[in-house]
Length: 347
Image 1 (cartoon, rainbow, N blue to C red):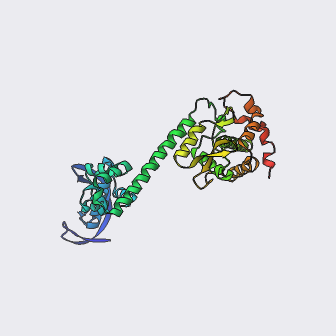
Image 2 (image 1 turned 60 degrees about the vertical axis):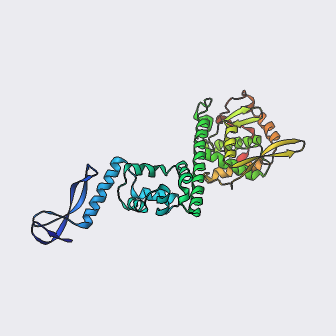
Image 3 (image 1 turned 180 degrees about the vertical axis):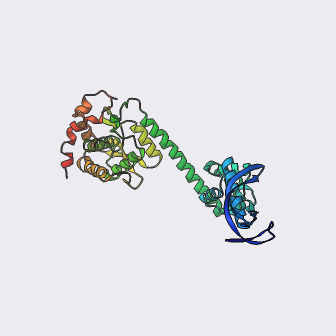
C-alpha cells in the first residue's frame, strides 16, 4: 500500500493502485498508455506519486519510440558495446557530449537526427569512415581496437553476402527441374563447405578438384541410397571426367576467396596439378551421425584412389555413360550404381 497526500481531502491517505489510461504530451504528440495510478480511496482523486509517474513517463516514451521507430535505450547501449566503446569514447567519436550518450542509454528521448546517426553505427563502413574523420579523438588503443572490429565485421558482411549470392545462383540452376535432382534436399552451402574441408583434411594433400567431385557424388548418392535424401543438396551433371557438382568451380572459388581452402600447385611425377588443402579445422557440426558414417566410409573405400582411377570407374556407370555432357544425373540412379554395391556392408 502506498501512502500519499490527497489535495482534495487535505490529508495523508493510504492510496490504492488502479490501472487507467493516461495521455501525455510527448514532443507535441498525445501518447495514450495504460499505467498504474495512485487513487485516494475516499474521494477517488488521482494522487501524484513519484515512482508511478516515472513508470508512466517511461511507458509513454516507449510508445513514442515505437510510433516514430526510434532506437530504444538498450539498443543504443548494445550498439556501443558491439564496437567495444565506452560512453566517453563513443561521444568523442561522434562529437557529442558524454552526458548525451549517458542520457540516451538511461532512457531520455533522442531526436531524429541523433537517432539516424546512431543507426548508421550498425554499418561497419560508416564506423570506418568515422575513424578516418574523427579517430584522432580516441586513444591509440581505442582506435586500433575499433578499427580491427570494424574491418572484421565488414569482411564478414561481404562474405555473408557473397555466400547468399552463390547459394542462390547454384540453387536456381535452370536444368535442375525436380527435387529429385538434388536428392530431396535444398542446396546447403554450409554443408558443402564442411564436407569439402573434411575431405581435404582427410585426404591430406591428395585431393584434386576431380577427386573431390567424385567423393562428393559418391557420398551424396550413397546416403540417398539408404535414406532417400542427399547430404549436401548438390546437383550433379555429366562432365568429361565423370560426375561433377553443378556450379563446382564457382563454389570452390568462393571457398578459396573466403580462405576456407587453398588450391596449391604440386608435382605428381611429370605433371603439375592443383591440390585442395583445408585452411580451417574440419568440423561436421551440421551432420547427423549416419551422415558422418557415410563420409567415413567414402573416405575409407575411395579416399586413396587417384583422380584418374575414380574418373575411369565412374565412366563405367550407366548413370554417367548414358547421358550427354551437361545432363543432370538424377539421384534415382543411386540404387543402380555399381560403385556403391556392398557400400553399407563395408567395414
